[in-house]
Length: 252
Image (cartoon, rainbow, N blue to C red):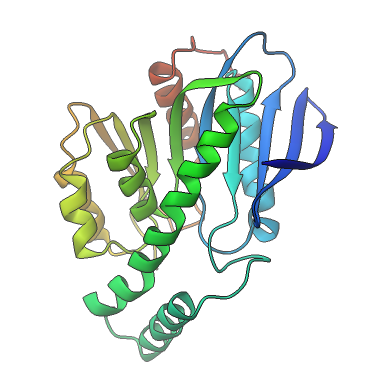
């Protein structure tokens, strides 16, 4: 890992850009923390870190207010990373299907999501290795956000992740439903009931498949970007409970 930029943001939030090989990423840490702090990995859709930055920063500020570090990396084939044929083909197939107005076939979902999962999960694990080697960054570790299939795979294969907060806003391959039966860590799933780009029933089936002793599904009316503020607060409470930090009072 190579730190490429460093700046202190208002509110005592230290932001550091980094590269891991050719993968860009961002790490946010609270300057008020003493000792080692838990870490939340911030998942996001493959739209590029530049486009996603405002939302990622808002989530990092929330994590910092709870005493956590937060980090993210650029996904394969997005942002400034080189395009990849398999991912581009999957995106093209999805666009043609949605423009035609029909349901998305399972084969198109698989072709779009599974290659991304296969590429992205090892990169997330390598980033976690590097992040946990930095002074002041420790466990436990949580994963928050989407692509939901990436979060499911990480919950299965990465023992350092002790809790996952997932956003049911992306397509779910059939194989991921089977993987979900191996997830045993606490799970909090946020579902926007009227999400125009999401298969609601597939999201409900995925939640039902989780083998976790503690799992919560929070469904709110509204579209993909209409997540209510109180839902984000509930996710924060979930991570405070499982990453070992006491609740922090929030202004109303």
